[in-house]
Amino acid sequence: MWVRIVSIVVPLTIALAFIIECKFPDLQFDWITNLVESVAFFVIFLIFIFGVYWAVPPTVQITQKGVVLHHGQSHQRRSRDEIRCIEINATDSKRPILRIESSRKEFICGIAAKVDLSKLLNFLKETFPELLVSAK
Image 1 (cartoon, helix red, strand yellow):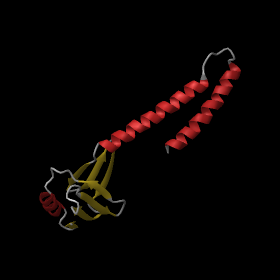
Image 2: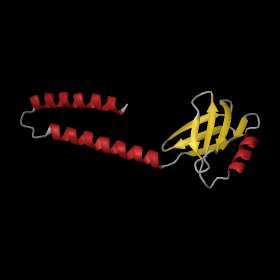
Image 3: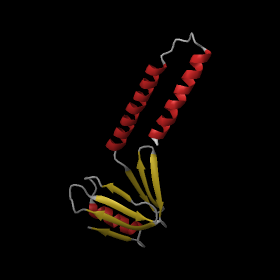
């Protein structure tokens, strides 16, 4: 998506720069330097945003209505009707994983070390008694 935005903005800027340069020949503005700087700042901004997105863990909210996964400013919601099964995979005890399979794309996220997996499993079974809630 970002490549498409840059691939549209750069030729548009070059075309506008040419038109403005023809209309105002005495205008002293370095179009090439400023275009390169703006694209460079845009790339730095994207690197920063992806770094924050990678460093900040998602937050999972489990309610009677379903499950919401918050990650940064975005969120994904799965209603109770969409959820097929929930699995806690603790085969790697240092990195347990919560997997929520639904009719749409499944959620996969890590579970913090401070979370008691047996309490989480019991909570999920109580919250979603009609679903298959399993632990590995």
